[in-house]
Image (tube, rainbow, N blue to C red; front, side, top):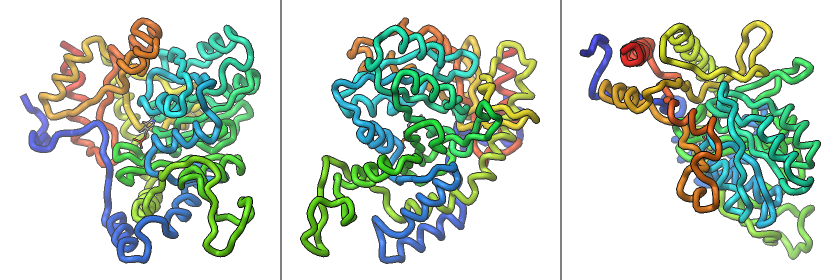
Length: 401
Ligand SMILES: *Cc1c(COP(=O)(O)O)cnc(C)c1O
């Protein structure tokens, strides 16, 4: 029974997708017609604009969000003797970056109300070991719901740890600090480094692409070198100088560069970022209202620090997640109606790879219960009112049965 005339079985509704305009296309074409196919002026332009957008001093554009995480781990010196804590409810790259450097990943459970890494669970882990046992924490602004980084900073300082904020879901997100100051996700006020992704389902899409932001100049310079083979061309950083051609490979780096044309696309998309974010918040308000009193449907709570005194929300809504008892049933029911809801995420510690490293099912009951019930509904700026109404109707129809 298809009650919505807008519903077109040939055009399924995904959980997320990019939005490309004529201006985006023109920006890319212009760069293609320029002198630069890989490293050109758009890279630095995108970095400056993005740093400004999230309120950080420095930004380093890289080939994808996973490369951004890997460079962060390298820059902070993760190696075989390093233990890092992260959340099981994230994309596996948040944990994998530690493994790329040979380090050990430890997980801590989530707060079931928000699905964010539970700071109290992290505190328990830290207090159970001697100082120096752990080196860092990677909190994730899951679904766009901003982590209270000030709380994590206090904990990290007490134990001598660094922080990487995985803000892939939260460009434009913010929380209010203890003094009521607005703190943008990735602004570097509390985390040593933060990362973003420009994968098509994320807020700003370049196809593949990522960014590291920081306020730390030394880390910034290290990231610039690591992005391109560990090579510097800056005479001030070199040990020797043989002439104009001279460059120096000072450490083992990678080719994690992003091409100029993708930065041109990113710049163009960034100009619409605020509008896209406002639209996401509007979609979330409609879902919130629709599910508030619906039996059998639970929604995630926004972290308390991300709610302003006048109801202003710092949630960036990369995802809109609901929890239902029969998640598989709902997933399949929606699919039959052309609604391609998704599950975010399968807990990282239950993946065969991490099971092989000694983690296992049963380790983090809140994360596992969350996984059994969660479903991400369509959430992207070009989702139409009719499409959203259709999604709500189908979700309620199933949940009401
Ligand atoms: C998308 C994502 C990444 C990785 O970004 P890619 O650009 O796909 O490599 C890392 N962390 C989280 C939480 C993500 O959602």
